[in-house]
Amino acid sequence: MLLERIDLRGRVHQFNAVLPQLPTRDEGVEAEVRSIICQVRDGGDGALRTLTERFDGARLNELRVAPATVRGAPDRIAPGLRRALEVAHERITAYHSHALSPPPDFFDGEVRVQHLWRPVDRAGCYVPGGRARYPSTVLMCAVPARVAGVAEVVLCVPPRPDGTVDDATLAAAAIAGVEEVFAIGGAQAIAAMAFGTESVRRVDVVAGPGNRYVAEAMRQVCGWVGVPAAYAGPSEVVVVAGPRTPVELAAIDLVVQAEHGPGGRAWLISWEPKLIDEVQERVAQLVEDSPRRPELEATLSTGGYACVVDGVEEAIALANAIAPEHLELLFDDARDFLPLVRAAGAVFVGPWSPASLGDYLAGTNHVLPTAGSARYASALRVEDFRRHIHAVEADRRALRVLGDHVVEIASAEGLPAHAESIRCRLRGDD
Image 1 (cartoon, rainbow, N blue to C red):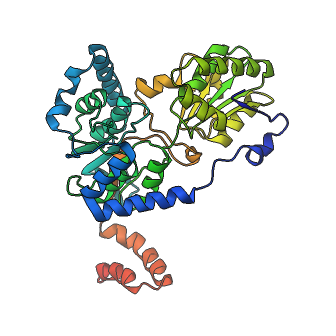
Image 2: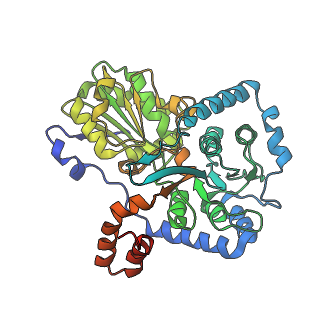
Image 3: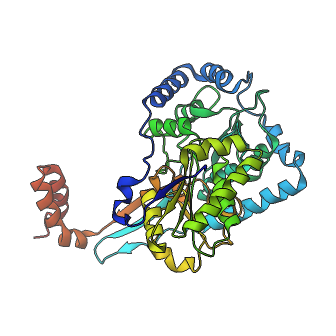
């Protein structure tokens, strides 16, 4: 069986101790990424061309895709695909637009605080390539940046061996209003956006999913450039199935995320051992018949699990311990159990809400936290492309009320100028 079976009945308090552990940080990957970043930072465009030929097999004269090529891409793709991308763009824009309103001013009678939202000036989006094309990810990264008000949105995507970028990806970029597209992939693309080269001007925020090299590059450049808190690495799903969950739905939804390729994880959790047996058999059939069989086998052979638990509450407790990117609740009355969910990138409630809906057209974002980072991080959203500035305003009366407390704390910390900044404003009031 492709899914390793784990019996966790009676072990609800031991989940964290007995779960298969995510791989620890790979020193080899860290060192290779560090070397790539240094090469790009020091060598600029020349290093990008060398690395692109090494990793993607493409020799590039120009790193940037010609703007006319991007603008014309929607006309070069099938009309049905173009309309689907346009509908996705509309729905993603509508969802993320709900986040635009800042909170009301705070005023407690003494101090007024205004909340000022300011977009970053330039955002960089990374979209994977190689094994598959991801025009949907272009929309997921670029749209919230655009909704946030970012003036310049740029895209990096790995080129094909002939040095080109596929038209579906370029069409999504045109629909989303991306200004610049570069045929650059991997850790070198992250370094280029973070530090800048002759062709790629540095950005303020880098966002997007990728393999472990891309995710590691984002970790290493964080601080030089803004990076959303989520670790957006190889894809993951937890499918929680009950006694009446259709076997076909549970099986196909495990395969959906696994087909992204190696490094990901697919978990089946149920309190019905017979259902687990049936789902495992169906998964094996789907894998055998899939045109992406190598990717599926690479994922499921190292990251596929079928867990037996005591009941629905234990199933959700196990899902919380995993903190998956996608959590599917395919059992009856799933909405009633949402209050128990504490850690997941996105939750899909009931049999008619597959994760693939969220991947494309629900309007929510499919750039989600992976590798357990859903314990503290969230989906990519408008706030990742905006700065929150608070503007504090007080008057003399407020300082009379609060000033002595400021002086006391400043004096205790040994910061006399802090205290004097209050005293000098209130001299003459006594």
